Length: 171
Image (cartoon, rainbow, N blue to C red; front, side, top):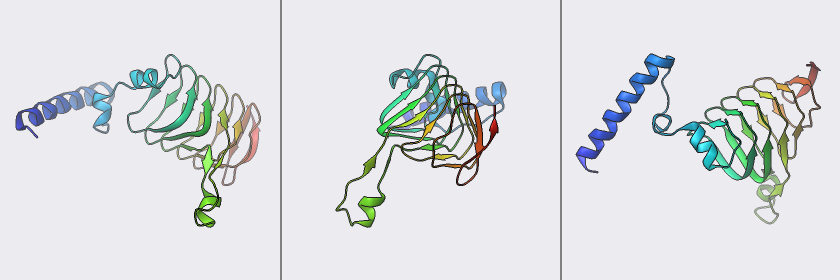
């Protein structure tokens, strides 16, 4: 790599990092100093006002509504279709799936992957490190607690957490 170009990139990075530390008191992965989270959401066809961190893995057909925040280190698997509503907060480390490869793996590759649409409604909070299995539907106005395994549908206005998930109350 051209040393001049490398030095220019490093200088831009150091300058941006310093600005973010002063303004927000945070240090980000390299890509987030260059990437505009709102522009990335627009490129992906997500709703107005939605933001998505640079290091989020987006696969397949993923639809996201307006004003949704998608935090760092998230996996959005839309290989079987994934819909996330408006005004949601998808915390760091969340993994949302719309397929699994269990039958494929245990059959030695003889069986197909299994796909099923996954849906998260509007105005939902998904806590850090939550895993949502394929085919799950989470209703509107739900809170899913950190580190939960969501392996069943969650009705509107529910508070739920645990591994496996269980409903703990209403909003």
